[in-house]
Amino acid sequence: MPNFRFRLPIDRQLTDAQRLALNNDSSILICGGPGSGKTVVTINRFLKPIRNNKDVMLFTYNRTLLASIKGLLTEKSEELFGNLNAAAIKDVIDNKVASFYKWYGWFRPEFDEERVENDFKRKILNRGGRKYSEIFFDEAQDLTSSVFTNSFILADKVSCGADNAQNLQGNFPPDEAVDVIFGSLRRQSYTELQQLEANFRNTKEIFEFARGFVPEDLGVQEIDISELDSGENPEIIIGLNEVQQMEYMQRIIENNTNSNIGILVNYSNQVIKIKEHLEKNGYSCKADASEDKSFSYYYSNNMPYEDERVMFDQMKTPFIVTYDSCKGLEFDIVIMPFFNDAQAALNKPRRHKEGDKYIIEKNADGTNKMWATVNHYYVGATRAKTLLYVLCYLKPSILNFYKPVLASDSDNDLPF
Image (cartoon, rainbow, N blue to C red; front, top):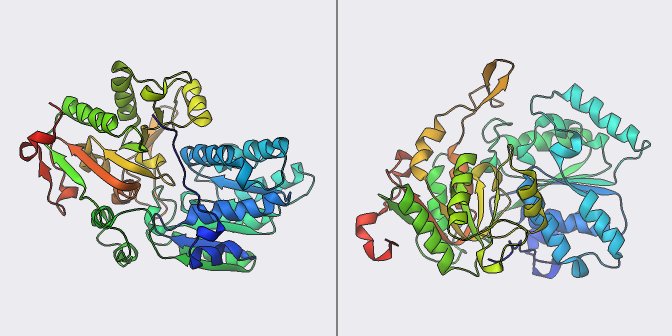
């Protein structure tokens, strides 16, 4: 199966708004919906000082996005890095693009401003007092306000990309991530806000379906989709048991061998379940997997190190991943199986163990943090460029806004 491909338009292919954000020399917060080009602009802004040997850092939250960016920079190094030699390029890819959490030293969301301030100052002292010339945060809404209150301790200039509707971690109150981040940056140093309003990823049908998950989000509902291409309606297929869903997924994979395919689920055990199904049918996630039977997967807690290393070295599709870890990615085809679990995930609090007790995690507004929010499914659906499949046994009420295709009505399309 093909390598995962991150599409990176270069300067002459950008829109006027994207080019304006790219060429802005001040600190900047770039906001916009899925497919608007936030990550594209951030990467292009990062490459400008890199080509001039500036000391900069690009941070992501999701390790899957980190892997895809590193893969892009490796694959396109000759055209992206100007006159840098091979050793300098390797240093950038290895050391200048990082997971913020790992770079910090396993950052915890509950760290307050004072703790983060002291830790940032210690980071700079360890560098001999040298600030970075610029730091870049992609998917900034996944971090916390304490990070942005102290960002200028690290660098003379700060660039961020953020979207209120993709605040999946609950580290900001609903619909406030952009305002809070911008206010924090602006209080420290002059910072501009640049809105990217267009969507360049989805078809009209896919985006119309995706925003059905968040009917009360006016920012999403007001996005203009008149310029999007038309395509096929999402296929919402109900009445499939687990075995039938697995078979359906495999048929999609086999019929689309040259497409980027993302398989999105709620839980890590579901990632493992699909992984094991593919392996039983001759597929492999190992480094030596044959091209026609390879795939990749990722989940954040206790994933086998060797498999994670292989995924970072060469990200393949189909790519199996949780909704939490899919942001920043895009696929030609997205499959959302086991969707009958969505309603339970919306009502199941996240917990972590402290000593002998399990502690329910909290959002920034004090509410319980659930395994999923409606925004998870909005984000998941907007990963799809051309085709979207939602598979389930029983219809969850979250899908009441959309008329599904029943399994009994589509027998000719089912693989059994």
